[in-house]
Length: 555
Image (cartoon, rainbow, N blue to C red; front, top):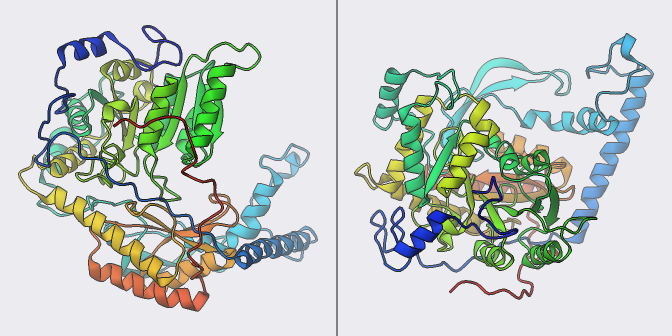
């Protein structure tokens, strides 16, 4: 387990008595065997053969686009300062919350630029977010129409509904966010048996048999020794990382890691160093420095070195270079923390994530994390690994000790989805959805590139970022798509680099070809109208992903 230094060499790979016994007995673990080929859920023998990794695409836009983008932000900022002047002299009403008169001499609660950005930039496009949905968030949904009379500071509902909007923004990868009565019978039965709320932590009176059943299913599905479930996906990272590493430890984090990973790393008190996205040269350089130099000032060896990466990066649509990272982890005797929030269920021949996608033994990953909020259509998250690791987290994780246990109907929904994907429910529906998602993903990506859009990410990633660049086009794009009854998510600075605003599509197995064709037709028309077809098929100047390294991959 990672929570203690006993039985482990410094900066070493995980070693335990259980590992030694397993090697001696060459025992079977969750269907995986070191030397034998075993059938797993009817989908072939043993590990799937490693797939040829499609390269992540980061095409560069023409220079004039970057220039116009900076000019656009500059103009908006200049007008923002002018409007602030008008507000200061009373010619324009200030809608923003202000300090009370008796607190005028206090230090401001927020930094000035944060307030400036919110009132002068964000408010111009605020109508593109937080739209109220009034139906099931499936492949189509209904929106409550709203308007603003004060430039997006407040909204009022008109009483009308925008129906049958195609949902291209939700993480409903396998379509399990559904209300089919036949599929949800077991969820209804569990609700009648256990109720909705638990009102206690797992360590007190909230440890139900259905929670333990879920954890057994998760471990079996992932091919891991043990697993633990948590009620919130974000907290699975932010509250468990501090239990695994602390002062005297080193975290090597990908520069595009999710906020939950960043927060967990900061809360841990460990030293954090960032490597370039998916760049093995950058990572190996940091590993070499860490091993050679040790901790600052004292130069003592690091207690632990933890590499933190994601399976699919949610803003870029890129896949982790897992085989190379595992090779580096072994070479420098570091630990690996893999966040599969977006990849579990979404990639791999049978939906088991990036470990299956690359033909890697999941037990090569020390801490395997994922969420139930996306492919499984539920809520919460999990951490899987060695039994010692999971047992340690049960006793030391803040999320385990202080958070209310997962709601039983939510737990049953996850179990239902896992059974469906594994095929143990007696149907092939789960595998049909996995294949349909892969087909939909490749179809949408290839058509968008053919149309001339710049699309980031890997060809197998259901997260599809379409680059818009200019700040004025972000709001125009989202509003125009909604008029065509297509709901999209648009993202800009500071969530992305200032010159890389984008629309992010999330593909679902529930999308029909007719839906995707309608989306593509609308995008083709709108791309010409607002001129966002910037592709010239040139590679980006981002750091090369295939730099030279001196490690070897496992055969």
